[in-house]
Amino acid sequence: MKATELLKDVPPESTEDWDGDLDTPPARILVALDDDPTGTQSVRDLPVLTSWEDADLDWGLTQGAPAVYVVTNTRSLAPDLAAARVREVAERTLAVARRAGVQVTPVARGDSTLRGHHPLETDVLAQALTDAGEGPVDLVVLVPAFPAAGRITLHGVHYCITGDEAVPVGESEFARDATFGYASSSLPAWVEEKTAGRVRAADVVTVPVERIRTATVAGIDRLLTDLPVGCVVTPDVVTENDLKAVARAVRAAERAGRRVVLRVGPPFARAYIGQEPSDPLSAADLPVASDVPQGRGGLVVVGSHVDRTQRQLRELRARHADIPAFEVDVAVVTGERAARDAHLSALVDRLAAALDQGDAILQTTRDLVRGADPDDSLRIAREVSAAVSEVVSRLVARARPRYVIAKGGITSSDTAQHGLGIRRARVIGSLFPGLVSVWLPVGGPADGIPYIVFAGNVGDDQSLAEAVDRFRATR
Image (cartoon, rainbow, N blue to C red; front, side, top):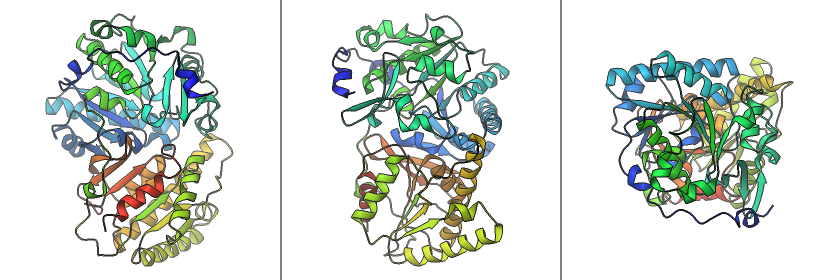
């Protein structure tokens, strides 16, 4: 349906001052367990970790920041491995926080189009908090909305909006995901579907946007504190202001002594810590590594296969026909070892030569290869991503790129951790309003090389080309 038609009867935004509470830093440091690195695209000036060794967590928690991101990359893992990783990160974080004398709020940062391991991650977080003596958990709050990217929740239904077209998320391409597919657009029904009936849709508490927009400040502060223990809550969020109201309600519940576990989309952390949306980074704002030779190009790594990425890649190639593209052949890298190794070595040689002349694209085969079942699809994705990361790692050792853009969630996580060897970084901002984060690695082989985390499902058709243009302007 038309988005204008969908939204025409929604009451005006509240004029209440939600910021009065959010201007004060929260008592707890929000620790976002990010199931891929794209959760950082709505924030700035925060530490991000791809490692959860005690020293890395201690570094992150002692930076004086109100939030820290830990990239778990669980969206690329089978359920049992994802559960083990979330538990490990949560337990280590809680232990390091205790030693550092700080309190933390662990949050499951998930996809705004509902892909990922749910309820697995919130279940594991709840158990970890209980085992650490910080539970039991009173409420599970789901806030997948990402208004800047056109993901909103209205009357309990989650939508993807592009232009003036609003599509219930269960009818979108994202619902057909090979691993995390689903049928429901109503969040209560989605909860029942994903919990296999353990939580019934009728028992999920929805918070209508009408209530959020007509409530007083005191009413918002009671929004979650008055709910019975054990509730799953899905508030409506249509705009940034609605998101601020929900963040205020969560902080009020925590002050009242309620233990809340959250599964959230990218912008929730920003609202929770009281950070206002910032202007996109201009070419003049973008850092340049001092040791990259003049004329050296940047590397664009494309692994995502969603339709939006395909269109963006086509537009990049159309605008910049001079940028060569080199393809990781999925059939070869998931086959015989010797052929795989020879294929990757040839790619490294060709890419190194190309970067000396300018920008280059490293992409996977554009036809999506599915496995026999969801676990097999994940296996193929992991093997392909490992091959891409190996190429990037070997390439950076020979020819440090001017910048690296990684397109896709799993791709950006593996490229950061295994390709560029990033353990610690700072999110310095985004290239577009609330979208596409820029990291500056701290230490390691990629120290000082701008790293751009570009989700597969965000931006318009021109966004990837515009990102490249922004960096070309820094030469």
